[in-house]
Amino acid sequence: MIDRRILLGGAAGAAVLAAWRIFGSSEVEAKTFEIEKSEAEWRRLLSPAQFTVLRKHSTETPGTSPLNREKRKGTYACAGCELPLFASDTKFESGTGWPSFYQPLANAVGESSDYAMLVKRTEVHCRRCGGHLGHVFDDGPKPTGLRYCMNGVAMTFAPAAPAT
Image (cartoon, rainbow, N blue to C red; front, side, top):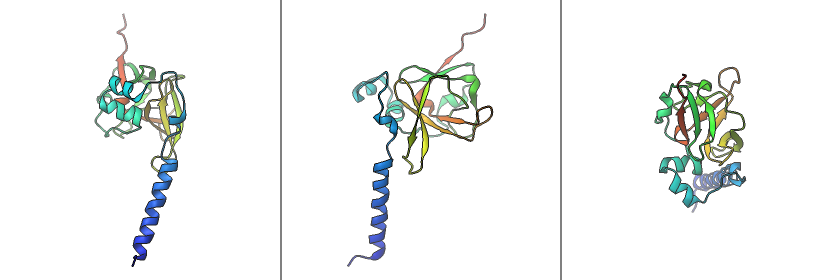
């Protein structure tokens, strides 16, 4: 005989799984981008960690990116296609363990709805190759009030040329 708790627990689990399958994928997966590559090509171009974050929408472990400690003037770019994304003067310490910025460069990122955690979040991706960068939240500093919480492994840093 089936216990009622087991039956209800199974039904709840099935409902969560169904919701995840319906809402769990990102809208960005259905879009087309200037730079399109096969999964095999991306795997050859990116490190395993970069591939997992940029192409599979994963998240790096907080506090692990060397970009958290980067303080020099320069530009942060997409690790997948080298598109400049953020200027160093918009970076701030959010205390989250990920590099955070209050504003991207013009025409650098795209946004889409992300339901992977079963709540709506705003995913940020590279507008040129579609690589997953992180998420944007409305708890950042002035002047925008936004916090672009980015995966450091999804970006590279190029220091500004020294002034002459």
